[in-house]
Length: 332
Ligand code: A3P
Image (cartoon, rainbow, N blue to C red; front, side, top):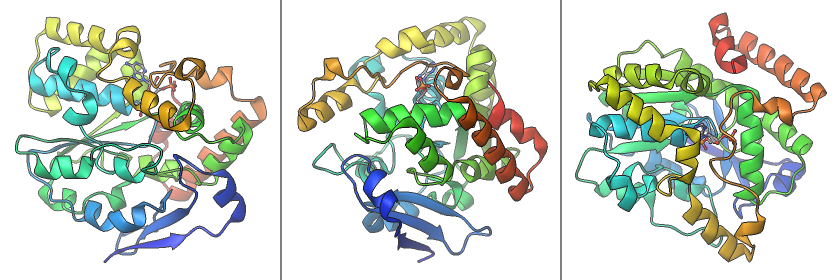
């Protein structure tokens, strides 16, 4: 087995970084990967990482990979719609989580907090073409993706918006009590699920010109969605008319999307509130939350903005990656 799991020893992390009813965390390491890489995760991964790593990949699979809160749901729906040649009817009866399951979702939340059908099993048993979401960093993805080479769309978002969005998700979905400052500290110390953030993006950025990989950003989707739709359709070997592109852009627009029950995870939050004995109406949080680029400015204190920027510069220098990547990490 090339993946090993190390228990996180830091007491403060064990006490404060809890997520989704999990209080024990591990560091995954792929000892056979060509670079030193790790991934912070819940202890639930210990029993399942082997099955994720050995997941059988098919040539016609379509993967959507991202660091959490990068606009995954937004991109998934775009990809699924393009692949179907536009179908607004099926989503009305089938939630995105079933059309486009998250491979390792059952290792994010403790069962007592959120119980749902096993996504890995759903994907394994699927007879038709599969659309697969994963937040796993490159070294931990099913190993066959590198030999079978299915189409992979990677979506990235700037560091500060990603972190702020993750803070709200940790608080409301993960039921984590950390303050914004504490959370951002965990984020910069790679103590959040799927962290570290920079290497997650860098590994795919460096593979972005591979034939089966399509690298997109949240900020480009916000700036010019029709153009991202067009390029992604080309990558997927699909052709959409100008009118279809505009109709899809409208369907994906924040206002419409946030009300779309096929994607807005309202069911998940209702179940969560139920088990936690919370009033959903008082939660003041929507999974499709603000949907802006650059909204970190409304919440992130100046000193932390500076710290984040310095951290990003340090990490990119360490990785010796071309400077163009700064448009991903800093772009809004
Ligand atoms: P914010 O919390 O900044 O609003 P993910 O799907 O990877 O969890 O990402 C969630 C982020 O994407 C949230 O960011 C959410 O609001 C944003 N998002 C989801 N759908 C969107 C859409 N159609 N348009 C713009 N932003 C969207």
